[in-house]
Image (cartoon, rainbow over all chains, first blue to last red; front, side):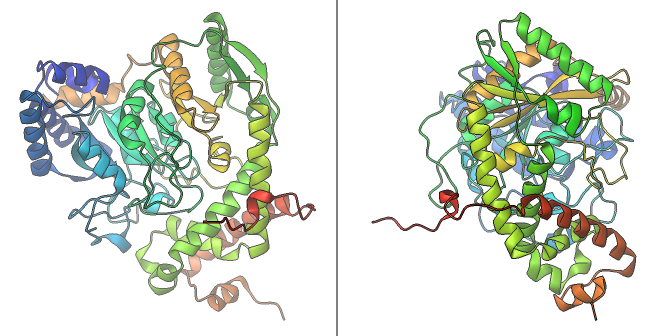
Length: 472
Length: 57
């Protein structure tokens, strides 16, 4: 991108656009050029909407020139996970089953982004229907990790994470049913925010699990996630799960630090329930010390074992996903990839009583976290027990799954993954911050403080830089 | 006589390539283990959140 625009955040780009130091057209052209130059190595985009994006950028430029600046997303290119419906533009779920699926209208979230003046750059790769896996048997290849293209991005919001990390687009959307925003955000070294359940409309996002699906932003920084949330969070009367909590100033705590905040550490999750790799643990402890030095207090918190959260989440999500996909699984199972077919079909075997019990147990877990959070303001633990794994292995199989995200899908509270360090091999490590329902602003404030204190936002994937140099 | 895993799938109108059966069966076994976690005794009145309630319009 010209003038190193690819290394700027939405906040920085927006400031320049607002004072007309940067043209949305120039920025969009730079993003398109960078996608064309680099994405052959990353496969982060399924569809680049070049002409449409340039038209939207020209419109934004004219509006801003006329004094009608709509806010921080005005003129900012955004990628959409390809499960977000786009009017007249294919929304495939990265699946052969939906290869020709062209929605008649935008998802509510896409409409809100357009109303905020965002430029829709294209549709990003995903695990099939947000559940499949990094698969090679789908119509499009899996996204690759910009920090090392031999490695997995994780998922399911794989393309969004890779594209933002590589600086192809400053922000993107993801969805998170069992960690699908925060997992790839962690492995790709970006910020990913799973909002409080109901805060972001699900309408027009291809469903996976009725009671666990969350849409949300994926950006280079927590601050940028906050800026995207200002547009994405809105009550949607056409979404039965939509909440209406009143105004939340998502960016209000950015730059305010963490002095006086009470931080709870769910230590048993990552020390005894599913032990972390030593580098991840060391980075986590260094982060805690740094937060304490900035004035936060830290105490351990005991919850149910992580496996209980995982069990409840799995039973609910598999049951609900099967209910959604059953007709297609019966009629045309061959149109799914192997991972997606297997993960969706497994839900057929969950007994009705077990689904009901899982929902009942979920209520207990919600109450348990609410009680624990009377004594602390946020809960933290590593997002992932390890750094990115090899592409081509099924990272989500087996009992030692890499992520701790699921607890906050089950409870519905706000959660954020931010980069808090790097391994000796130069791979990102991430911290998970969870909060009380509708305190997304506080979670984003803590994530922003972590990024600033740990100094992780000045380091971009070296591979992306070398590819850039080769392209010039 | 108990049904094979493949027969259980077929009874639900589902079918996968034979090579995928072992991994699907393993995943189903993981879910069965998960179900054991939530099969605990609970008082009938414990979960008002799960109760079906109507509200006066």
